[in-house]
Amino acid sequence: MADTNFNLSQGLEILRPKADKALPVPCNEWDFLKEKIRTLIVEPWFFQSAGSIFIGAALGTLISVMTGTVSNHSEPYAIMIAWAIIIVCITAGAICLLFAHKERQVHRIRANDILMQMDLIEQRFERNP
Image (cartoon, rainbow, N blue to C red; front, top):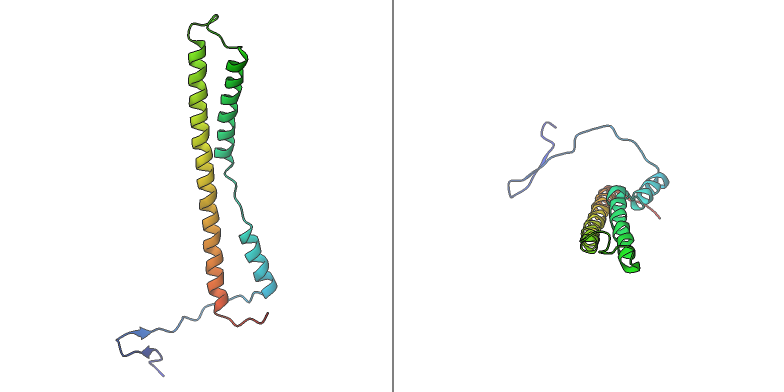
């Protein structure tokens, strides 16, 4: 019984798995873990907050321009500066919100990878519903 590996006709050798320590996990605990991973959400707070702040600054400046609070009487280029601030803040806010959306997708993909691996492990065993 020295050579216990299988030899196939194409020159492939199937190796036996190494003996290692394992922990038995009850099915209800396994299902609980899978459900927790399925609902796992890590919110991208920094980009979400920064985007909201930029868009809020743009809206505040837009309201000031629309209500006439900003005028060329006090400063020569006040309205032009205000519109530049609005454009820059909306652009920066949109970019931050886009990053937040992409970061949320990456975290969702990571959780799905873990669930796929757990499903592969689960397929090795017979399970009666």
